[in-house]
Image (cartoon, rainbow, N blue to C red; front, side, top):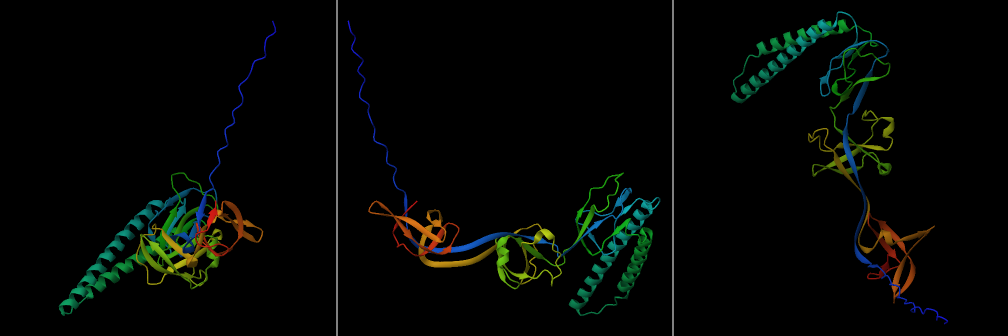
Amino acid sequence: MPQEPPVFAAPVFEPREVRPIRTTAVIRGNVRDFVNLSAFQIAVNSRELTFGVAGERISAIYVSVGDFVYEGDPIASLGVSGIDEELDVLQHRRRQLNQSLQHVIERHNLALSLAETSGVPIDDTIYMNQRNDLSAEISVLDMEIAQLFGDDSMTNLVAPISGVVTQVMTFHEGMISTAGSRVATISDVSEVVYMIRGAETELLSFGDILEMTLEEIPFQMEVIDPVENNVSVRPEWRDAAFLRFIDGDPGFASNVRGNVHMLFDEADDVLLIPNRMIHHATDRSFVFILENNIRVLRDIEIGVVGAVLSEIRAGVNEGDLVIE
């Protein structure tokens, strides 16, 4: 017998879910165009020390990071037989004499202060004699150390300026010198200067006043000319600006970073739209407004552009629904 073909159920079509239109109302408020830049302290003047010859044994490095050295103090030397022990003795003696001199100066100042407070004058001849004797002995030791080092800057490195050792190579016995390799860096930290970097620094001029926050405390800073202020500028700092405290150094540690707030423009009590809703085409800016459930394009005039919101000077009204 013939079989009837199978009868399939009629297809069921479900209506496609309509996605709701997401909108944000035009609001009135304030907007700021600003940027926050990290500021860190730099040395006004830094000098890098390198050996001028290669292939020689490095006999000693005499400093560590954080040491304060005076101009002419020995930093490092290449191997010269017989001087290492003698140099150690002389430098040890110099440190002892320098400590003694500091103690005498402290006692002398204390005696002068007590005399001023009590109104009873003192004879400070003994202090002055001690200071002169110690200073003279230190000068003699410095000459002996300098003579021991010799005048050859190719093999003996001395501090070119007074300052703090901010970098020094790790030393171990048997090291061989490499011409041009940095051995140590001496930095003059007598004046505090901060540096900020970024494309925004091109908008600054010498003499501009900025606010910098250090540990939540605001300070007024002046943008300075690095050339006039003898700031050593590295080639990679082309996008940098240099700042100095207007009211004097407050004494923060050199590793404390600051935050500089640069305000470029601002507008108060204006119409605002989120930046993500604004569209651009060549020289045209526009948004889409929801009017009676219809998507309508409107050209707009933009004012101050903030990090999240932009000022709209023309094209929309407060309360208009902008389509995302």
